[in-house]
Length: 479
Image (tube, rainbow, N blue to C red; front, top):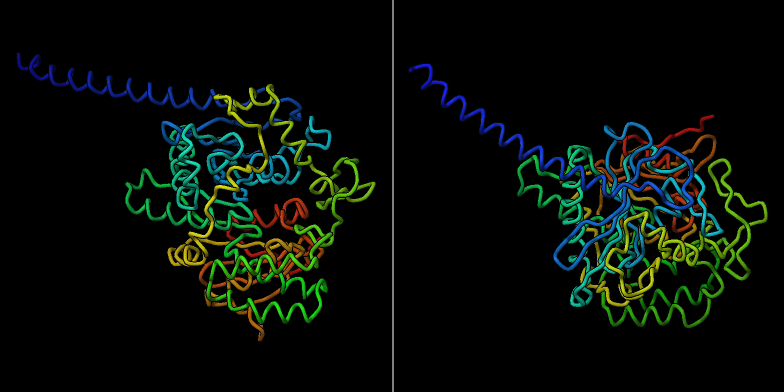
């Protein structure tokens, strides 16, 4: 009888464990099913390379969902970090620009129908998530028009954070991986604020629910829009684009805006900048390239890590990748959308690489500067890398340097002049850089425009690799 009495609790315990295991197994099966549902298997025009990739939606609320495209690392995805990539605008697609023109493994050709494999894809070093954010960008949507009346940095951060929680629920095997964020242009607003939000929320969660944030990398980031615009006149003067009288008159009138933002005066400043025609006829994303004045012609050819054109630079393409219209046409195709599990609700407007609705509705000046967010991240021990193509007029090197210097960080001293030095890619000076003891690295990329990975793909991949591995860029030429 005693044996029977002892056996009953044991049997009950085993039964309970079996039920728990069954529930857990069902949940894991459901998660894996969600992951498999998003697997991309028949993307039209895809090169025949063995890369696992997934695309689909993460639900944010009953009315809105954000669209993503995820590429596993080419090697060792189970151990490589996760990187979220965000393009700017606000309102531009990370799928069209980031994935298909910059750092993804498949670059759309000029025919708008086929791809070439990108030998400098960033998923050589990490698992990459491309997110279309905020709602209204690309395939991301909301069924509630009120959401478009409240588009700002805060709502974008909250939605992107909710996306990450949902994405890690869908792909739980990556939850413990090191997590980074990277992006360009207006991502200089998105990324620091989202990183700060992740840091704050992590403090409120059990460690098992953390997002394992390690650092951020920003390319030609818009940290302070008024500083960027005012310092673009400094850039123009330094590059011989404007006369001294204009330079002096502009600074006498508007340079005070650098330290004391005034929206009305800033708007007058913008009107003044473009009224005299000094900036007409240039490509603001690369002042050394011609503007578009001829039909689309040749196809992009990748040489030794820099872009080469047998028939010359074709400005009607952004460095001869698929043009904006070609990208939009490709992503508007029903067979492409079906392969990517996109547009499942039949969005009532045409696909656009940069959403005019989001651009017009987005409230930008609620957050004038993201320098305080960057300072908080550095104080909390996160790594911050800032990259600046030095031919970019839209977000010039001078403005980024000015904003960073306001933080009064401590240089890592290299010589009697401080820490500023050249960095090398292979046997060439690729740019100049400075490192700070607080964890920030600021560097230029010589001859690169706004979308640095387009202009210097090999050097950009090297930057990305060094950032992930917490390594300084080379001081010397190598062969």
